Length: 449
Image (cartoon, rainbow, N blue to C red; front, side):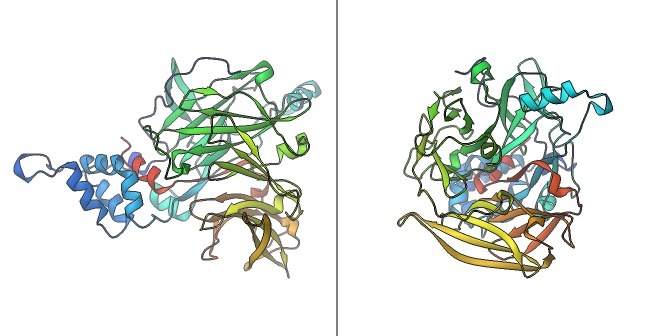
């Protein structure tokens, strides 16, 4: 069971780390829109905004004055449904480099202790923007200050410089909070919105409740089916963790509704995952309340839009079996689960998409693309890292064997490739997490103050 007290789902905040509104010196222009007969009601303003050609015009209106920004934030759901999608919301990625803080003085005993507890010394998280993210956020260089502090929580400022990025979806980021030196034998997670500065610290998992190796993903209000009642709070989220017990693989979810962890449930079909496979699960794709991870010949599926998570049966085979770094689950524009495979296509990086047809339970190869800009000596030079579900952007790195090493973003719709970072060390980046927003979350975030 969960241990420790919990306050409101989101606490502190008030100033976003990544928000462009907090990086500009001009701020709002204060127009007099609320006096006498010339004033417009919020409903009238919202109706006007829904008739604008696209969401980018709404963003420009929101930047004009505080009142208009407030109306846009309040009506974000309706505006997002009424207007064409806002492009360019794949803002960038978070990552970490390994950092041995003990240096040469680290003893073999300390090394064994870190291995036994699954904890490693890491540098502060670094944020690398995409080109569209740089334009939106107002900076174009990697930043190591994006997660320095997360506002007031409890009796002090929450320091995120020792945190570990582990998941991200729909504008929210899940971090594992670690103390300096990593001596804390507990698991503390938090969910934050870097655009607004909001942070929710989850109840700590201690003792037998603390998983040592785990995978994690996130569900938000944007994932709820349209025929379900919407949660009153836009801060709604659920966090799912998958981990091992002595004899079985277990699931547990946290809900912002109840501010508590669910009871532990067991994986009901297939063998227990090995710790090696569990540690390599990586990103979880979420579709219709179900999270998916690729396994050796199939996919692990867990429903967690219900009070307690439960495994969903998948075909026992059908998924190709390449190296883990050469495959990644993704989503098609029409909402189908698919698998991305990378390979060496005549000396160039190539990508194949295989779609899962739920009606037949089969994986069907759909299309492939080869980038003649990206030469590789072998498929091992490619490392698929993250898929941005809303924008259809694939993030990957190329290693030393490539003629063009670094970190890249490729649009599966246009096949355009953008280089985000030029370094041969990108393939060794740890805790690599893509960061993007959906339209509703972004429209709400621009009212940050």
